Amino acid sequence: MTYEHISIPEDRVPAAADPTFQHVLEGYKVADELAAAGVGASTFSDWWAYKVEAYDAIPYNAALMTKRGVVVSINSDDAEEATHLNQEAAKSMKFGGLTHDEALKLVTINPAMQLGIDKRVGSIEVGKDADLVIYNHDPLSAYAVVQKTFVDGRVLFDRDKDIAGRAALEKEKNDLIAKEKAAAKKSDEKKGEPSRKPEEKNPVEKPKPPSSDVTAISSNGGAQ
Image 1 (cartoon, rainbow, N blue to C red):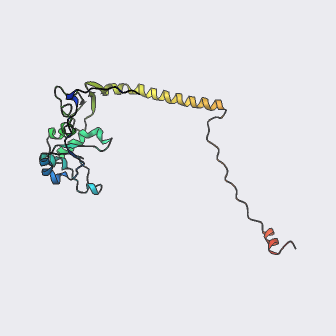
Image 2 (cartoon, rainbow, N blue to C red):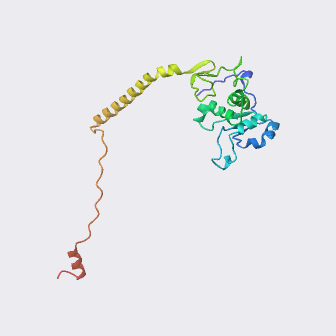
Image 3 (tube, rainbow, N blue to C red):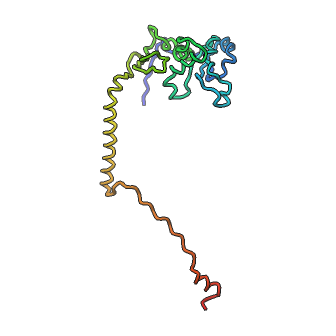
């Protein structure tokens, strides 16, 4: 195996990430101290009281820390929840009264700042990576559905094309399954053993106890 050295321009190298507390479910209790120390906080939107660690967690946590000057982001801690972090961020508008833009920053520029990559991503500006998502509604709406996804300016997902191609993918899937079944059947026929479930074996019969006559002979010391 060979490795090729890849040079990365200096302006593409991430800066040192800012210190950030993860989960920090009780960050609202020390929000002033966090802000004064210049550390960030990455927390959940509305997880609380499901274990000892989260006993004092509240859904207002992200908003309270934001209003105290802490750079806050919403994390998922879960692969499924990561698919709708935009809606998780929107909850801070209900729990804490953040503005639309403040809530949107929780999943855009703020986490980019915490990771030290805000010169490349996190906002739509000239010179930044063209990593974009286009929705059919406001990104913070529960009705928002992704229409297109761009990474480095290239379209990696197009909903219209995805829907149009689903029939072909389903046909390809069914054809592959049928082909696999046919190959398995042909293999069984070649062996002369049609595919079937193995026959169940009869349980081993236990020996029967001796008859009453044999017992009587034994107790009398022999036949009379």
